[in-house]
Amino acid sequence: DMADLHDSNEHYLMAIYEIDEEGVAVIRARIARRLNISAPSVSEHINRMESQKLVKINEKNIISLTKSGHKIAVGIVRRHRLAECLLVSYIGLDKNDAHKEADRLEHAISEKVEKKLAEVLGFPTHSPDGKIIPVN
Image (cartoon, rainbow, N blue to C red):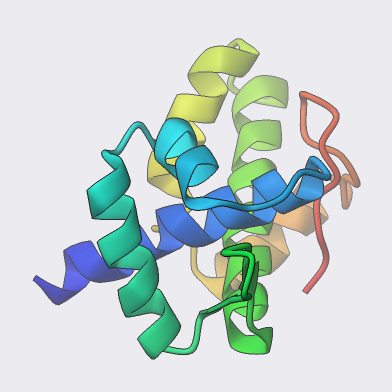
């Protein structure tokens, strides 16, 4: 179903963004480990994302985000980390619970809510676990 595909694309884009952010090569095995998905499933999905022009794969099989993939990834990561700030600072969840809940919330936060959320939180620059909140 298209909604599931959209959702899983978002999980993949965020994983790729975060693996790259950690300064290591983005390869299928790392995505598989991060998302806890089988290697064949990851390969199939990455190929689909390549045909959707969300990722590029170089001759060394290293995956990178295209311009449009990066734009979507930044939005997801931003909403996720803002949600973590809200959940930890205002609702009082611990960081682990906040991360799991933010995984659910990131898909439901609109651009309008994201802007207000950033404002209400005082435009935080880092998530509760110290990761930079990207700006789109």
